[in-house]
Amino acid sequence: MALPRVLSVIGAGQMGIGIALVASLRAKIPTVLLYDRDPSQITKGLEFMDKLLAKDVSKGKTNEDDAKAARGRIISITSSSASSSTSNNDEFGWARELGERGSDMAVEAASERLSIKEGIFRTLAKNLSRDAVLASNTSSISITKLAGAAVEGLGSTISKASEEGKSCAGRVVGVHFFNPVPVMKLCEVIPGLQTSEVTLERAKAFAVACGKEVSTSKDVPGFVSNALLMPFLNEAIMCLESGTATRDDIDKTLRLGMGHPMGPLQLGDIFIGLDTCLAIQETLYEGTRDSKYRPSVLLGRMVDAGWLGKKSGKGFYEY
Ligand SMILES: NC(=O)c1ccc[n+]([C@@H]2O[C@H](COP(=O)([O-])OP(=O)(O)OC[C@H]3O[C@@H](n4cnc5c(N)ncnc54)[C@H](O)[C@@H]3O)[C@@H](O)[C@H]2O)c1
Image 1 (cartoon, protein in one colour):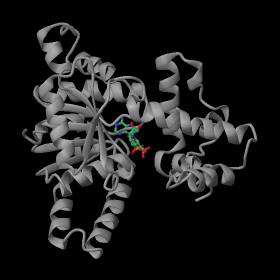
Image 2: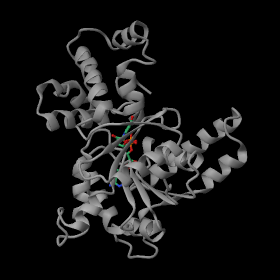
Image 3: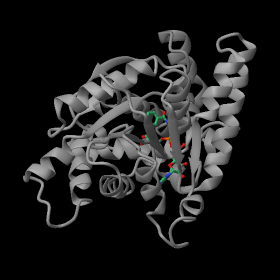
Image 4: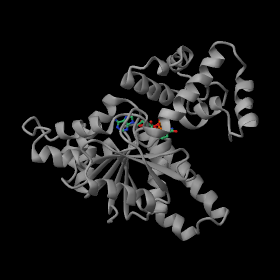
């Protein structure tokens, strides 16, 4: 199955940077375009990527030439770089640039909010070629819904049931990588109701080329991974909230008693981010209307306070 020649990664947070890195270093995709609406995220993310590559080289996992070549294949796209060929306040100039550079696959890794992702899928469908794979790294949001948004991006004259609408929705798929992307071995691939077989196979081939094992899940809220993991984290936060145990004892119990590599509060803080945890839990709750998924009140308050975990300097722990 053919791999993309020009991959676009939308969102340069912890996941987008990791996906761009494995796509370039492992899958050797010839061009990886990296866009974020906040240019400082790209700068910060690429600095982090340089450190990861340098560490790989010093440990002998990658040689210097491969690391240099991988970094050289990654091109940053910002709204201002894209607007050089368009007007300065053209909010979709970045997407047009991805299209003009021939992007034949996009992986969206922006913040876990439906409205943000729907906006991106509308814009990508409008600006990328009509055979590009449009993938999302979402942790919980419906791929079927994102495929619907992609069709809307083609304009009001194209209905979802038309041949053009079905063909566009058929190119949308979930590729759920895990954090840290270069380390975690799995990619969960999720077909929406409309995803075509070809798209599914292209997504799997991409994940395998990035060095991942693939599992498949149906398009249910949270897919397999987060339908299992997130209620566990939410329960841990509820234990803290109700005073069942202290932060340290909750994490210690799971680490030493169950052999987990880290406690659930550390996992939420360091690797997932509490805003993402809350967004996923809300998707589970709203998507199933089952009270067992009610997000912890404390989790909501922590996000209100901007205590998102390591990425904001404070969560259950201080950084
Ligand atoms: N952190 C994890 O453990 C993990 C694991 C698997 C999947 N995910 C999923 O990956 C996605 C990204 O998560 P993350 O942890 O990298 O978040 P993050 O907060 O580190 O990064 C999100 C990035 O998206 C950017 N962004 C927001 N709106 C945008 C837009 N409209 N256009 C372009 N960029 C935009 C932000 O500026 C930010 O840089 C989410 O859907 C999340 O659920 C996260």
